[in-house]
Image 1 (cartoon, rainbow, N blue to C red):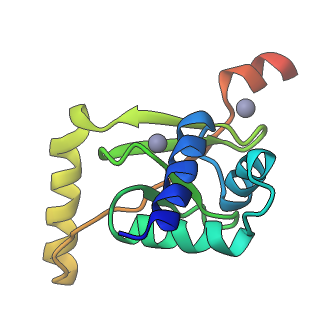
Image 2 (spheres, rainbow, N blue to C red):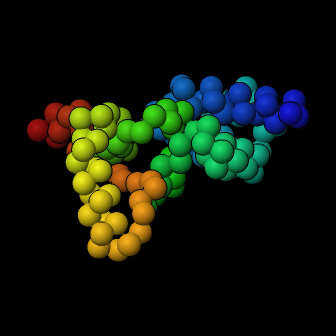
Length: 132
Ligand SMILES: [Zn+2]
Ligand SMILES: [Zn+2]
């Protein structure tokens, strides 16, 4: 493997560990502090190949830019609509429930479910405290 590509990947992985479910531009801003020569296009390209190969997770946000996650273990995301913080929730206890949904969808549509894209939105406890 090409050395330059691995170095870029390493920088992106470091940012993903440091930041909380960042967007591509947040990763870019973070890397740029140490490596001012990196381009936004390079960051986008690497995030694309890394999420396609399953090394990282792309979280589609619908009406906002996609976010990225170094935790590729299946889990749920809850995002605060006030401050934008993202929270992880383990799916283990809900496995049966989601399998039922998959089965229901397969029966009603004929589509065999292979992955799920879900995002939950609300107001985090920090923001609720601030406003109350
Ligand atoms: Zn919040
Ligand atoms: Zn996550």
